[in-house]
Length: 214
Figure 1 (tube, one colour):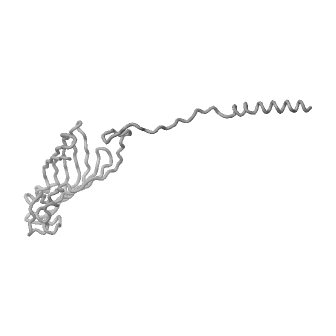
Figure 2 (cartoon, one colour):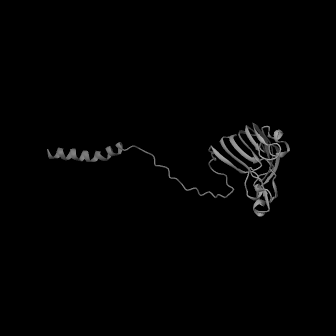
Figure 3 (tube, rainbow, N blue to C red):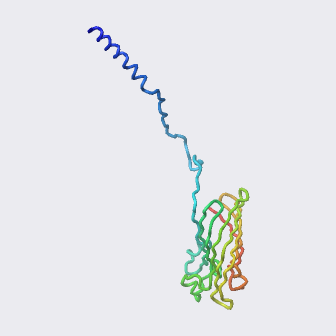
């Protein structure tokens, strides 16, 4: 009797490790993450593509001139303000403002409160809201078109009044190099150029710019 019990205990003890080995699943070892030791520099391309998110806000004073700060109180440039929101690649909505007389960089007229006090819009102004479609035309050329509504006021001179009409604009940019580009544009604020005649020079205007970065 004791011998049979001893045999059963010995058999159970010998079978225990075998059963334990059968219960545990045969799982492969987890891979070990190695540190990235490859040399990199400021010219290295990003390993993951950059994702652009929308909407994106852009804008500012398109007539900003560093000489305005250098010759403060002696010379100035009329502001030309633009604010836009890009809601998708190639599609954005814009709002703009410009004085009726957009005279560029010029000496300050001490008899003109618009020059001496910094106020804008005393002579009059043009504003617009528009949708803008941008389309690349190859690797170097990008073109755009704008369509919207313009509101203009002329507050001085013989041809005073208000005009509301169709706003249109077209333009293109040519990329000469990574740091140099040339762009040109044309825009029209309703019938303001014809209605206010020579008392406004910003209602219908052609522009060209050379952009250089350092």
